[in-house]
Image (cartoon, rainbow over all chains, first blue to last red; front, side, top):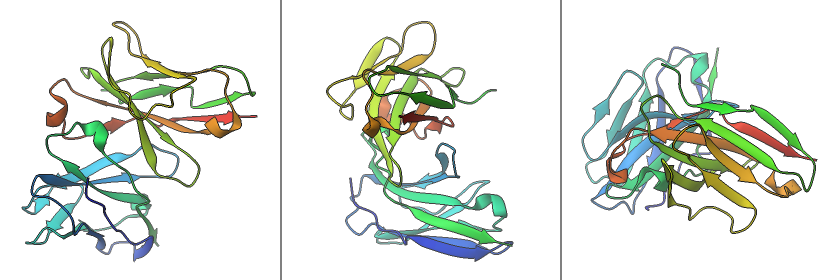
Length: 112
Length: 117
């Protein structure tokens, strides 16, 4: 799987948009970009995933650059409950879900 | 619709004892995955099971660790003769039936925190 690079930590004010970047410059054409988050003392929670088009759901938006070498997860109106570690993961489409490789992620802190 | 249920939430064992961690997948889910998270580290895949079958155990330590997902009842992760290095958070996840490559997302439980004294 392609390696991802994320900032170690970020801060964001409550109510503002949180934009979490991820670099995956070696991504292959058949690899999806996944985002999960892990709130303290809980299991990871799926947020969103995409291949090449931008995606939006009730939790977040995923913006993937045209060359697919990077992406940004956007939490449009961050709340204190969004404080968590956010993992950007790339996964080959044909491989099983167990092949998700969780790195160190970005520790996002939402400040009141 | 209950989520993935793991118990116990916390488990304390002395060195040499056995630890049994249980996981009940979401209703209708037939795939179970176990992950381990060591302190200050990311999650590491251990084993993937379907009912009565181990599909992928490439992340399981070769000794002392075993997993099962019987036809009836929860999935069990068993650690024999625990050592201090086994202290970690163990997470279970589940997914609906289907080919592994078609699984879009995993649903995780809240984990079992194992502490070995």
